[in-house]
Image (cartoon, rainbow, N blue to C red):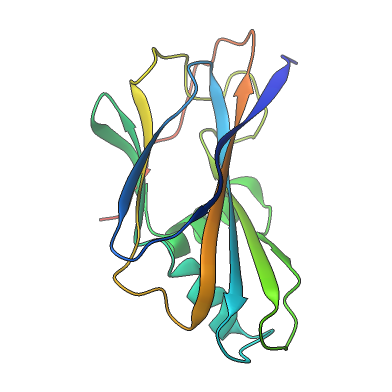
Length: 170
């Protein structure tokens, strides 16, 4: 099993309505990208599917681009489904309580292969600037306050992946 390296791509960056942001991803083989959404309730919506729907609506589109071509292109809700279908892991939801002005967190991964951390299933090494993450935010972010995003990657050092996944929303 190769060593893994966890890197922070974006640390608590505010989500701005109608923005498109692009991040350069690491050059080593990439196992997965982890997203942690943070928000506060604008009203008491608490522990219901409304809060989760609002959190997923933060992302209109998530794209992983290799030399400008989309390898992955999904919405927040599609990512929720793909993560569960590919890994069997359920997204982590922290502090989902029914109170106004509470801070909540939703954690999901975008797997690059069928099995996270597997040396044969990852996106292969690339050169700086070739692999990018592009996020498109909606015009409005719903009934939440102070939405923010943390993006981290897990690289597999000393691995030579043979396979990676490509999936898009039609």
